[in-house]
Length: 437
Length: 100
Image 1 (tube, rainbow over the protein chains, first blue to last red):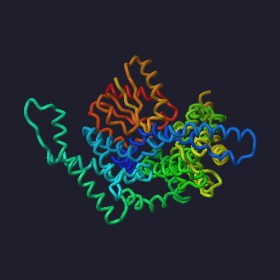
Image 2 (image 1 turned 30 degrees about the horizontal axis):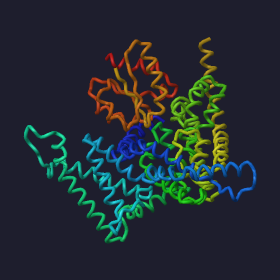
Image 3 (image 1 turned 90 degrees about the vertical axis):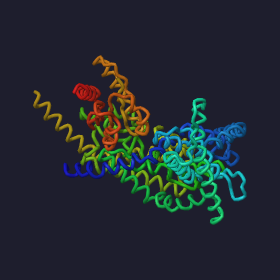
Image 4 (image 1 turned 60 degrees about the vertical axis):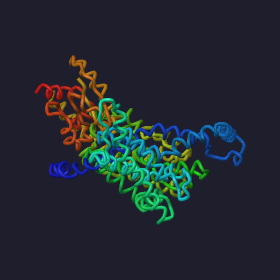
């Protein structure tokens, strides 16, 4: 055991560190973190203007009246909220490009205003001007996300390289020159080089492929998305995440690099839903809410049921942890369980801890893929209590039933292992109290 | 005194933050505890006097250690202390480290 621990700390932890502290991964994560308000506003605008069922197809009754009322609200709000949706989720790639440039340049300790604006410019040049030199907003949406990330990162890297090497830096000297002017003159030539480069890049891609740069990147990412967005991909990813957690290492190592894919799929689903696609026929299953609402119920390892078991445990020690863990569990936070129970390095609990979340993923994936339960198209944020999050993200009551069923299934799988562990603890407690007496 | 408390998203450490501030008051320390996500380290690291890392991101210790001057303590919170939110123990360990 000690050998294993040493091995992890020596060999796995540095790799985890490299991945999690990778500057691009961090900048993208921070960008998404800052965009949460936009995601939430867009999600709710979408939900309000898109009742899940067409009331005219329903039988008379209270549910029909409710849906009819919803449809009326939707019709009334549609002009305003459609615009809100387009300006938030519908333009998410632009905001990601800006957010990434801002955070990346901040990490480089550069003055971040110009690189951010420049990233906005290069986004328009590459992601928004089509082969007829017309303004085209297709890639403002989630489909342009990967392209936006590439262009934004490239812009900042080029700008950093050019300004560091002082290439084309026009130095204004003299006492009377205002500092703001000095700064903008310094960046004039680098900005010119970058924008012309991006314009050329876009023109070349359009010339040779007939399609825009973000379409090309999207095509290149397609196989990777396909590799992950299926039952096996979800199962294996979840298993890796849980093994990391068993060693007490945060899942950001996996979910960090994964997040652009999760968001790209989610926003693609959102736009499809806004365009009238039914929730059961959306293009992607694996999204941000799929992972955090349906798989990690109560936190990584799907420990919501386990938190309840701990809360009611006969062992004093476990009950103490349970009391600490029960409230955070509603918000999908389970560090008290992982480190306090602990689940980390706990051989008795390894099997359920590692297997329950992948199982949730597999069950949910199959049901969503078959169209029995609606796929996710709104983002309730990862710390929303799962049954409510399930309703918000799918507007499908079956999704709520699914999450409740998963909580029970998870609890039943944890139960036998938990009983063994509880017995060990109670025996320990008896032994200790015997010693004291 | 400003103590940084870092975890991945700044969520799980939020609970500990309050407990640590209470504990500091008991010890009559004028301390402000700030729970932040790992991605915001750069913004706060300069004007902080001590750094505590959640055990789930202990792998970042070496990086963080390099970011702060030698005289300021950087500590990884022990898993068990973090799990049961043993603020008293964590604070005492930190004070001990500060007095070294």
